[in-house]
Image 1 (cartoon, rainbow, N blue to C red):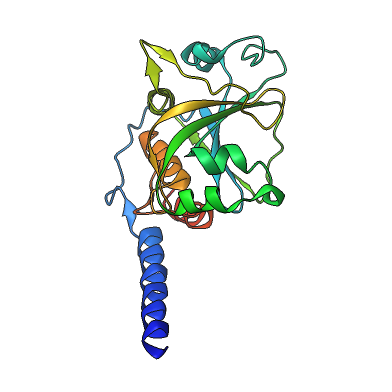
Image 2 (image 1 turned 45 degrees about the vertical axis):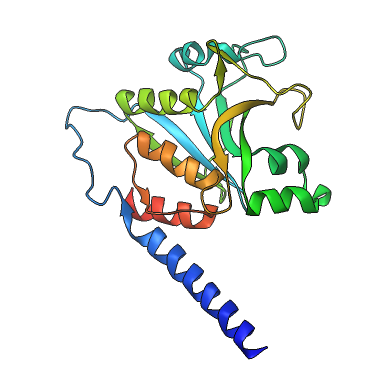
Length: 223
């Protein structure tokens, strides 16, 4: 009994230390040198929930063109009232089968703790009020925005150049799910994908950010 308790305590201490180091050791270690002429002309948002993060990028003409492969009557990318494209990556089972905490099931949790296929989730939003506790905003330049769009676009699985939608999957009338590259697990999940996407835009994150809280904290420290 004591041996089991000591083993569990060591695992918990190791996890806490790993999260702490992952939060406060920046990635990249050295801050990138920014061109003095690069203007921060684009505003992106980090949207945080209790266990998941999304990225919201402004729906300007360039974004609509870059993600034209998403546009269809059920997902009106060109709608005049749509101001933001919201994107997230996550585990297929947990994402699709747990739209609310009240619908939590054992199997999606088990897959999230082990390994699961991944999906992309996309949604549209109108005006988003700032500031809010769950929203962090960052201003980036045009080149950084293009790299972020490319990172997100490259995360979709494509079959002969066409993205692969998941039929009849979504939380509401507009949002959609698509097959995604990579595999999900608890150590390298939705929030580490978000962190990698933000790094592609020239922002600094922690070395390892498995939780929304650690990602938000490292983003606030290093940006």
